[in-house]
Amino acid sequence: MIGEVTGIRKIRMLYLQLLYRCNFTCLHCFHGKRLQYADAFTAEEAVTLLTLMRDEYGTEAVTLLGGEPFVYRELPQVVRHAKQELGQRVEICTNGYRIERRLTEIAPHLDLLRVSLEGVGSTNDGIRKRGSYQSAFSSLGLARDLGVPTGTTMTVTSQNIGEVLPLASVLGQLGVRQLKLHHLRPVGNAADHPELLVTDTTAYGRLREELARTRLPLEVIVDADLSESGAPEICAPSGGPREIDRIEADPRGALTMSCKAVGKDSHAFWYEKAANRIVHRPSATDELTLSVPDVVYARA
Image 1 (tube, rainbow, N blue to C red):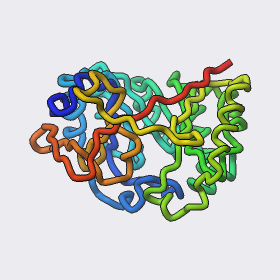
Image 2: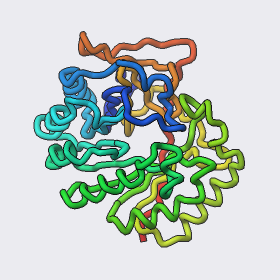
Image 3: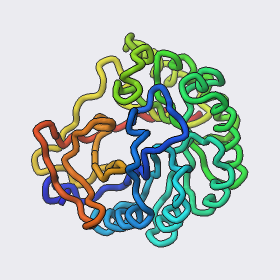
């Protein structure tokens, strides 16, 4: 269905939100009240969607996230199926809070563990949860010892934009390979915390300049929206692109092709779990908007 409507024939990665439930209530979380929702994929539904995406769109990788994927009871089953049965690259995006036992269980099937951090020490804990900074570093250290490559994500806010380079330095010492920087969107919990928004957008330019001239201990990937003018809207051209990097499925089955749609109820496509099919449900507000490529600052 996606191919017929958009012309897309290949989708390289599926971002699969397994559930909304989370053991954190971060100040900037785009899910907001949905963290209380019971919507979730069963393991059977998850592996069926993964198989459909591989067979119809050549999807070769999956990122499992939530909510918090490590509170999803059937996580090992989904990870093993994606790796062993489908041969996909498997990444998990987590808060890293007390995940040691389950991480050890799935480590042989995991290609990348990505932990979310929002700064150094108390800056992180103030946005996420008390004790989360140390727990995240404990999980990153265990992943390293288990031979699992690691990365991190950080949502840039007014409170942590000055800690990007200090955090990168600490992460590099631990052997973390990558730091991804995301733009804060005023949806979900972030809509209730406008103080987190970066109002002086020239600060993004200064951050990019710092990254460009600094010898980095790891690769830093910067969201294209982290610029003074913001990233342009990239809509599907006439006839559609042949390939895209990603599509995201939320726990209800709603599909989005752009991070600009995350946290909103504007979705042109839905995965119907019971029927195992993707359908087109356009609304008046839907646009086939694609994500803009990120900027990469390579490690020294």
